[in-house]
Length: 252
Image (tube, rainbow, N blue to C red; front, side, top):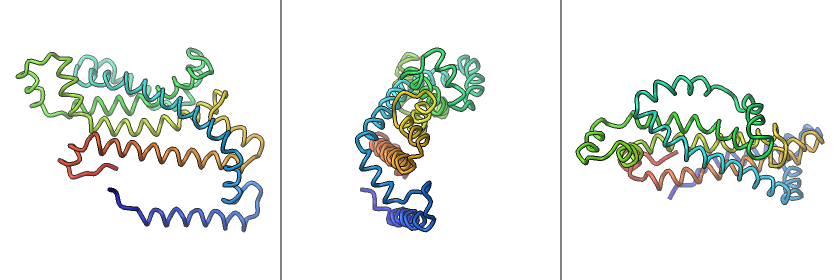
C-alpha cells in the first residue's frame, strides 16, 4: 500500500489557503475566492457532472480507438523495416501539429459533432502510443526473436506473443501520456466545435463573466484528471508487476 504523501497534502492545503486569503485581499470580482468557487461548484454540480460525463465519454472512445489501432500498427512498423522507412518520416512530420490545427480537417471529414471531436482525440493520442510501441518493440532483446524461431512461431504469433508482452512497459508509458492528452484534447475540441461537454461549459462561463462557475469547472477537470492518472498508475503496477519487481521500480 502506498504511503500518504504528507508534504504534497500540506502543500496543496497551503495553496488553497493562499487562494482564499489572497482573493479576499485583492477583492476583485474577476478573482473569486475559494469559498465562492466551492459554492458555485455545489450550485452547478448537476450541470458540471453531465458535461464532464460527455467529455469523459469522448475521451474514452478516442483512447479506445487509438489503442486498438496504434498498438498493432506500432508493432508492425517497429518490426518490419520497410514499413518503418515508409511511415516514420510521416509520423515525424505530423507529430508537431497542435490539436487546434487539426480542427478544420476534422470538421471537414467528420463534422462538428462527436465524430470531429473524437477524430482530434485520436490524432493527438496516436503519437505517444505509436512511438512508444515502435521504440518498445525495437528495444526487445534479439534473443527473444530466436526464442520465437525455436518455437516455430509465425511472424504474427511472434509479434503478439513475444514482441507485445516484452514491449508492454514502454507501451504503458505511452498509454499514460495518451490518457492525459485524451482528456485535454477532449476539452479543447469542445471549445472549438461547440456542442456540449465541460469545454463548452467553461467557454460559456467565460463569455458570461461567470468566473466562479468557470473555476469550479476547472477544479472538476483537474480532480478528474488526477483520479484518471491515479487509476492508470494502479493498472501499471498491477499489470506490469513482473516488470517493476525485476527493475526495482514501483511505477510513477
